Image: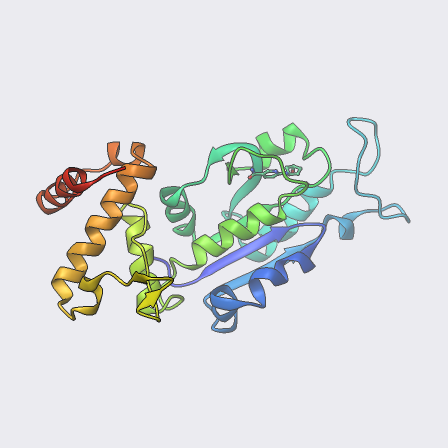
Amino acid sequence: MINKCQVGVITLFPEMFSAITDYGVSGRAVRDGLLELQFWNPRDFTEDKHRSVDDRPYGGGPGMLIPAAIAAAKQALGADTTVVYLSPQGQKLVHQGVQQLANHERLILIAGRYEGIDERVIKQHVDVEVSIGDYVLSGGELPAMVLIDAMARLVPGVLGHQDSANEDSFASGLLDCPHYTRPEVLDGEQVPAVLLSGNHDNIRRWRLQQSLGRTWLRRPELLNDLALTVEQEALLSEFKSQYQA
Ligand SMILES: NC(=O)c1ccc(N[C@@H]2CC[C@@H](O)C2)nc1
C-alpha cells in the first residue's frame, strides 16, 4: 500500500487538470499532500520561435519534444519512474490495473494530442500503454485524469470510511449495491425496510446480496473471475430464485 501518489504529466494543456486538483476528493488529496502532480509542457522544449508542437507525420518539423519532456520529468521524479502512455491502443484499464499502477507510487503520464506520438518514442520510452475504453478522444488529458482520480482513491486517508466501503465493493469485483437517502418515501417508493432496521448484519447481507444480484443481472461475466464465498453463493442463489424480470 502506497502512502502518496506522485504523478508527472506531459501535456500541452496543464490547466485542464484543475478539474481534479481544484475539486472534491482529489482536490483535498492534493491539499493534504497525498496526491502530488507536476507538469511538463512539450511546448517549453521547442526551439523554433513559433514554438510549434504539431509535427507533420514524418514531415520534418520540431525535434522530438516528448522525449525531451520525459527526460526532464525523470530528472525530477527519478530515472526509474514508470512511463504510461494513454491511448486507445493500450491495455484496458480496470480496477486491478489501477491498483497495479498505484503501487508504483511515482508515474509519468503522457497525454498526447493530434495524431499521437512517434511509435519509436513508445518503444523506447513507454513502459505501459493504457486505454480507459474503446473510444477515441481528442487528447490523452481526460484519460490521464480518470487514471489519476482512480489511483488517488486508493491512497490511505484520501477517502472517508463510507467511500472506502464503496471502493471495497469494486475491489471485490462486484458492482455497488443501491443507495438511499431521505425522504423515506419518494414518488410512492419506500426505502427498503432492512436499511431502516438498525440490524447491521442484516443490512450487510442485504447490500452484499444486492451487489451480487446486480452483478449477475448487469455484468454476469464479472462473476466468472470471482471465487464466491459460501455466504455469497447462498445469497446469490436466493436472489436468483426470487428474481422476476
Ligand atoms: N481510450 C483512451 O484511453 C484514449 C486515450 C487517448 C486518446 N486520444 C489521444 C490523442 C492523440 C493520442 O495521443 C491519443 N483517446 C482515447
